[in-house]
Amino acid sequence: MLREKSALVVKIHKGLDIVLTVIAFVGAYFIKRHLPAPLGGLITEPSYYIVLLLIVIIWYLGFEYFVSSILIFTNRTGSRRFGRFFSR
Image 1 (cartoon, rainbow, N blue to C red):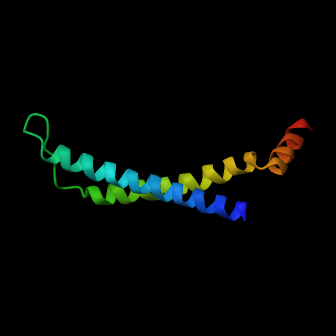
Image 2 (image 1 turned 90 degrees about the vertical axis):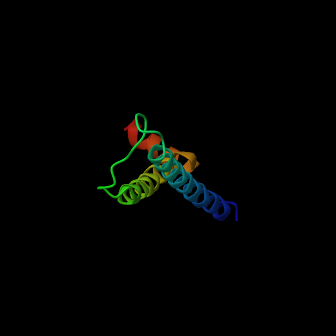
Protein backbone atom coordinates (compact mmCIF):
# COMPACT_ATOMS: atom_id res chain seq x y z
CA MET A 1 0.00 0.00 0.00
CA LEU A 2 2.73 2.47 0.94
CA ARG A 3 4.80 1.55 -2.11
CA GLU A 4 1.82 2.19 -4.41
CA LYS A 5 1.18 5.55 -2.76
CA SER A 6 4.87 6.39 -3.05
CA ALA A 7 4.79 5.71 -6.79
CA LEU A 8 1.71 7.92 -7.11
CA VAL A 9 3.40 10.74 -5.19
CA VAL A 10 6.47 10.51 -7.44
CA LYS A 11 4.26 10.72 -10.55
CA ILE A 12 2.43 13.74 -9.12
CA HIS A 13 5.76 15.46 -8.39
CA LYS A 14 6.97 14.80 -11.94
CA GLY A 15 3.76 16.19 -13.41
CA LEU A 16 3.85 19.22 -11.14
CA ASP A 17 7.47 19.96 -12.09
CA ILE A 18 6.60 19.81 -15.77
CA VAL A 19 3.52 22.03 -15.32
CA LEU A 20 5.56 24.60 -13.36
CA THR A 21 8.20 24.58 -16.10
CA VAL A 22 5.55 25.22 -18.75
CA ILE A 23 4.04 28.07 -16.72
CA ALA A 24 7.47 29.64 -16.19
CA PHE A 25 8.39 29.33 -19.88
CA VAL A 26 5.12 30.83 -21.13
CA GLY A 27 5.30 33.59 -18.51
CA ALA A 28 8.87 34.49 -19.47
CA TYR A 29 7.90 34.45 -23.15
CA PHE A 30 5.05 36.91 -22.67
CA ILE A 31 7.05 39.16 -20.35
CA LYS A 32 9.94 39.32 -22.82
CA ARG A 33 7.57 39.88 -25.75
CA HIS A 34 5.77 42.81 -24.14
CA LEU A 35 8.73 44.68 -22.66
CA PRO A 36 9.62 48.08 -24.12
CA ALA A 37 11.88 48.22 -27.21
CA PRO A 38 15.40 48.35 -25.72
CA LEU A 39 14.75 45.50 -23.27
CA GLY A 40 12.22 43.34 -25.03
CA GLY A 41 11.16 42.18 -28.38
CA LEU A 42 11.25 38.67 -29.67
CA ILE A 43 11.41 37.63 -33.25
CA THR A 44 8.37 35.67 -34.31
CA GLU A 45 10.10 33.49 -36.90
CA PRO A 46 10.95 30.47 -34.73
CA SER A 47 8.06 28.84 -32.95
CA TYR A 48 8.79 29.01 -29.25
CA TYR A 49 6.10 26.43 -28.59
CA ILE A 50 8.21 23.84 -30.41
CA VAL A 51 11.06 24.77 -28.05
CA LEU A 52 8.65 24.33 -25.13
CA LEU A 53 7.65 20.91 -26.44
CA LEU A 54 11.31 19.89 -26.61
CA ILE A 55 11.87 21.14 -23.05
CA VAL A 56 8.92 19.09 -21.78
CA ILE A 57 10.14 15.96 -23.58
CA ILE A 58 13.68 16.38 -22.21
CA TRP A 59 12.33 16.99 -18.69
CA TYR A 60 10.16 13.88 -18.88
CA LEU A 61 12.99 11.67 -20.14
CA GLY A 62 15.36 13.12 -17.55
CA PHE A 63 12.89 12.48 -14.74
CA GLU A 64 12.35 8.91 -15.90
CA TYR A 65 16.08 8.25 -15.94
CA PHE A 66 17.14 10.04 -12.76
CA VAL A 67 14.16 9.25 -10.54
CA SER A 68 14.41 5.55 -11.32
CA SER A 69 18.13 5.73 -10.49
CA ILE A 70 17.46 7.52 -7.20
CA LEU A 71 14.72 5.08 -6.21
CA ILE A 72 17.23 2.23 -6.45
CA PHE A 73 19.32 3.86 -3.71
CA THR A 74 16.36 4.56 -1.42
CA ASN A 75 15.34 0.91 -1.42
CA ARG A 76 17.39 -0.98 1.17
CA THR A 77 17.72 -4.09 -0.93
CA GLY A 78 18.78 -1.98 -3.90
CA SER A 79 21.44 -0.19 -1.87
CA ARG A 80 22.70 -3.52 -0.54
CA ARG A 81 22.98 -4.85 -4.09
CA PHE A 82 24.76 -1.69 -5.15
CA GLY A 83 27.18 -2.02 -2.21
CA ARG A 84 27.90 -5.64 -3.03
CA PHE A 85 28.50 -4.72 -6.66
CA PHE A 86 31.22 -2.21 -5.77
CA SER A 87 32.76 -4.20 -2.92
CA ARG A 88 33.92 -6.95 -5.26
